[in-house]
Image 1 (spheres, helix red, strand yellow):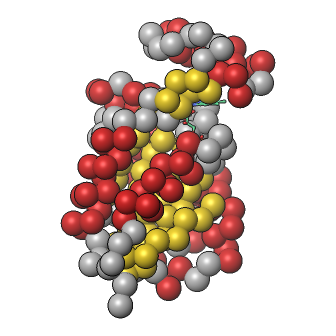
Image 2: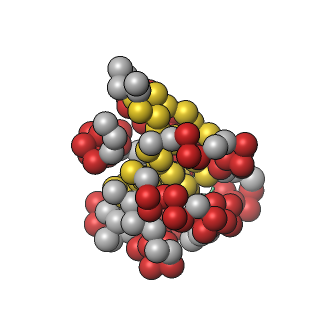
Length: 179
Ligand SMILES: Cc1cc2nc3c(=O)[nH]c(=O)nc-3n(C[C@H](O)[C@H](O)[C@H](O)COP(=O)(O)O)c2cc1C
């Protein structure tokens, strides 16, 4: 019998979905099957069918979305009774001193607010896709990048995700989850 892992993502521009699909592909094997699901559709899934759960969520203007908090609140007991993990996606995490659960402000804040004790927490840098943003977001992100010494060429796409760190997360999750 294969163990079942559910990966739930909360995304706006798709980078958290991309990371979730990558994790699923790597985890999938003889002993584990994976399902990847947008947090908007998680209501149609029976969580108790799964042995392991990973939740990924991105940051926009300093916040995770309400859907994430609603999901965590409703399913807190299940998550604490299951081998569960969380990963955060944001651009602050491109800085080495801000890419751990202890040093990333958004991850620190989240776990101050909720009583969830995942077996593993990951923090991954996301992507800045200037051409994809509307004018206002483009200007604001450019300004934030300027003051944090990041790239400001608005004709470019910058993927900061360090896939080796995602690989480390996957290896560690394998050790800490079923099987
Ligand atoms: C409008 C907007 C606001 C953002 N605000 C923040 C922020 O406050 N802090 C941060 O670290 N990253 C911020 N980001 C960067 C996103 O977290 C990053 O682009 C991430 O890859 C988005 O993930 P998603 O594509 O899964 O939504 C912002 C991005 C956008 C487009």
